[in-house]
Amino acid sequence: MKIRQLASALCVAGALAFAVPALASTAEAAKPKNATAKCTDGTYSTAKTKQGACSGHGGVATWYADEKGEKAKDKADKTAAKAEKETKSAAKTAEKETKTAAKATEKETKTAAKATEKEAKTAAKATEKETKTATVARPAAAPADAIAQCNDGTYSQAKQHRGACSNHGGVKAWYK
Image 1: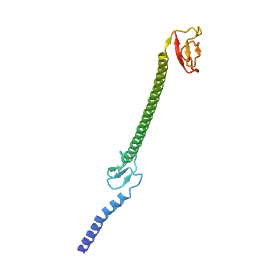
Image 2: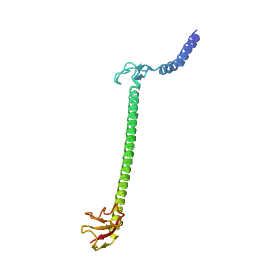
Image 3: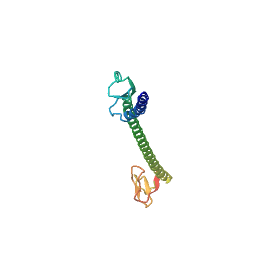
Image 4: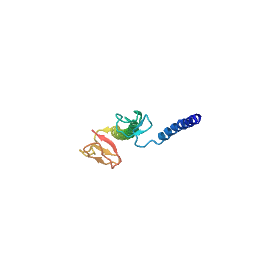
């Protein structure tokens, strides 16, 4: 009879030895969503602070609340990094637009300078042409107020050289 009791006790002890790890893994797999800590005895706590959590269960084995805080921090860091990237992208776009505007302004300035230079050359050629025309003494047949004789034979009484004889084929000769 004693052997029988001993055998039964060993069977019960063996069954308990196999059942306890199975219960522990089941409890771990069924961690509640709102759990903030796992106690040393395998139970879970929803305490807001670490102090006092699992006080009747052998203390805190694992504190989960910081994990939630870390996830929120990681999310905030990612959001900040994304905002910084967008800011840099906007700055690059603005810089590119500024460079494009500067190039356009430079091109307009060069075009205006070329046009001014061309006008100056044209005026210089006209002046040179006027200067090349011979300056002679006024003939007796010419009117007293004539400053030039035109290529068509008429006389110009203009106040200045510019435009004199413009509708008469140009200046043939200037008078002193």
